[in-house]
Length: 346
Image (cartoon, one colour):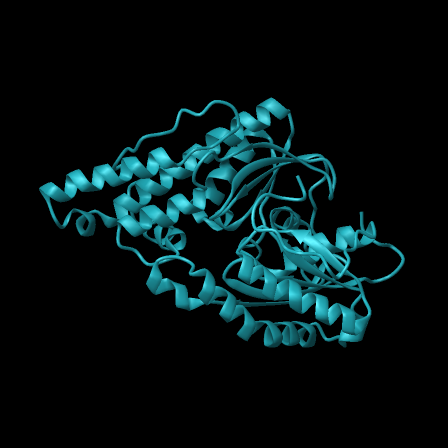
């Protein structure tokens, strides 16, 4: 799986949404990681595409420059540049793709197109300097759970993935953010709910659970249930949310996570796989991690979850996926164009 003959340096560039990130890997060992977050979207309650692309234009050069310098190498040592080709916001993607093309052309090295969703899964193969840890073995079940995606994938190897199920409406991360907005919490709402929920009762309030057969997900009904519940309670007491904020956060979080746990249990039993790999921003949720650890222990499942810094959008996961593709010489021509929806990986 990994090169045994020489060290390969991959620069990864991620600009699919509102994070400008670059990282350098030496094989699968992280040498540097820089992430420039965009605070401008907070007052709008969500990502504004035009503002995101402008921020990427401002951030891309210094972010890449710092990532290379922090890695302690000269850019001439880079073997390839991995870039997020999609899915994502068109303007944001174009900034990263255009910059990567230009830098690769100037250095005379190949570019490697990476699917954003595949990269989230491959973040589990990254190790820190000097770290020795067990890595996932193929095949395994992966759950990508983020603001834009919730889906099960069977990973046959580092390049071969098969979709087993996905959300038919909203993603789990979107459910967190939109219910947080109903509670008048700041964006992004997921981390705020996670923090508030630690002081609340997860069984204080019950919300509707979807009845979706198979390995697909649905979160729109849960959102509607929360909306109508709050509407009715606020008619009785205008201060209901403020008085019950911690319990509301805990109950919403509990509902979302239990939906995921139930589907995970079903997916592992149907596939008969014994290894579960988590990917995406929601895998940083502390309650989700705790529940998964408990589940994995009782069910004798090998569980892999990236460290929190590698759960959100980052250049390291792009470099990791790019490294695997580099070993198979899966390069791209300089006229390659980004895609905004779907996936080229599975």
